[in-house]
Image (cartoon, rainbow, N blue to C red; front, side, top):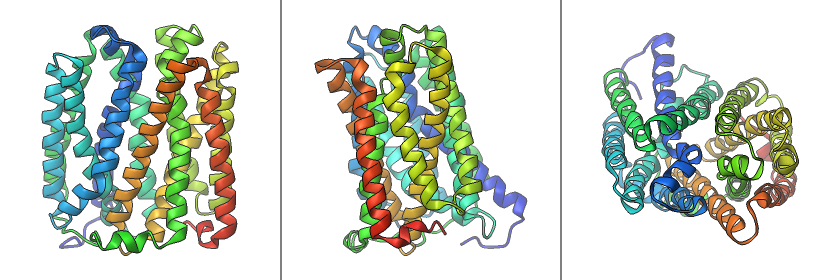
Length: 394
């Protein structure tokens, strides 16, 4: 724990810094969604083929989250964060200089390795440095940083890519990461590793059926979401016939809705833990099911993306809180597994969207996503009936 008491103001400032770090990491993870067409053009490739980069990134995170977390579990957390950021920055330098698609993929693998460790430890660190009794609020602030990546990071990254080139987008992210690293090093206290767990924790965690059921639910929901969301940029331009500026606007309001979802979770998450999660999964499923019909109507698809963005953020927060609640004795291992499983869903969704685009048609990505979303909803109803402890967020 911290070596000496600190003021609530300082404690919240540290949480904000971690939220800024989350903003940077989520921006770089998702900014390719807004740059697929530009990257494809620069390398003379099909957009659907470039999308495989999202799957590679996600599955590297999925495969490496647990091994890297275990390899670094005894390292003091402030020092570990600095090392993570250094790898992150160097990888973005390679992205900036990438001379072909393969060098870009290699740079993204470096970013993914940093990502794998970052999201394994950040949720538990936010709770540790937050004021006492503010676990839910600290996680909501971390989620707000993640959501701001959609609100500001992805749209601004897309605009930079449009006017200055997509490589400059990655360069700017690298500079932002350098500034964040310096601030974190200065303002975070020393944070010895705590309750990180060990390899022996893994079979113990998988013997907790309620936790395993949440992991499976996460896989289903995230796969469903990213089947459609990964290709929202080419979908809106090629299928819906909307312009580049409107697509940027759509990404902006999707992210802004995530902030609203974070606020709603902070207010309602403890009061209606089950109903909020079930409602959010229903809203995501309905949004994807209506995507094709709403896409050609700017107002309709804008409202749809607001509902969709709010709902997926509430789902993310509800899952994280439940994982931390169900594994208080091995939070880092549990969150590492969660991060890996979440990224299995991202990669699977991006790959499924790729295959739908290539072998069916891109217009079908919403319907396929909605089908998986419906399956996730049924599974959620079942596990809430089977495991009463899942009704509690505290």
